[in-house]
Image 1: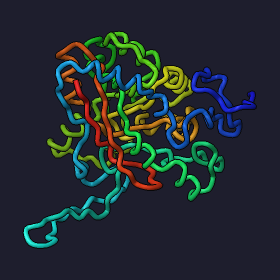
Image 2 (image 1 turned 180 degrees about the horizontal axis):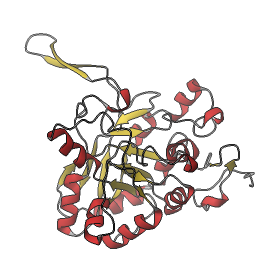
Image 3 (image 1 turned 45 degrees about the vertical axis):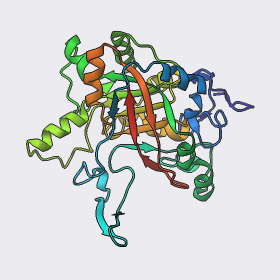
Image 4 (image 1 turned 90 degrees about the vertical axis):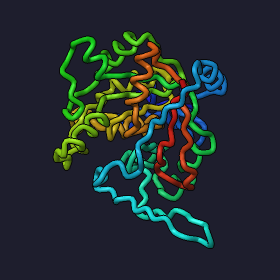
Length: 317
């Protein structure tokens, strides 16, 4: 496969991108502003257009509480919160064991590396990467643009295609994703923030309310297919970020033959990924109004050299 002499363009076809042959990993290194990745696709004109699309001013939160998962997924520490006095009549918060990925979260460009080939851009030194790819760069620009909701369980129920179970290892294939977008009457545009509702959070709430054992909740769930066909769709659609209500965007445990979608999207192509975002109330509102696009607003935490952030995301209809 060819290697580009000059940095690739954001308009390059997926199959024309440079490839790390040892990993079969397509890369967009050098195509975006430093430390920004695919969020660089959200031009001011796109933000303005999304803002003009606001019709009612209704605001819907897209996040769950920091302590929503007890115990947290993937062995992460519990968040310990305490209210303390700091002078007469003054009270403040102290949080210990705070992992920004404990609940609704952004995976930053430091979250995953491509083995010995390094983080996004081919940076192999962690200190250098922290200085170039830290989440504070996303915080400085914000994440604002047109959100597009793909409501998988609703489409599955209406179309009668499959008995969709978000706690099973089902994969959303490119053709199915395109079919749902078509049924919703929306087309992906460059700079969009793709929001995937697999129904995982709703199912998790039901299981918790029923007192069911959830110890394998982070090990098996439905999500995006991880093969290059899905990566090609995401890259060539021009979307700036991919968010999901499941723990990892892709399905788990996943097919080893397809590789890791995280590695393909983050260190390979520089994508912003959001996980465990709550799209349940948004889905109800979108169905009621028959429209699945909205203004998406998120303010990541300015953690210098950070690998992740709480999502702090809202939908404005």
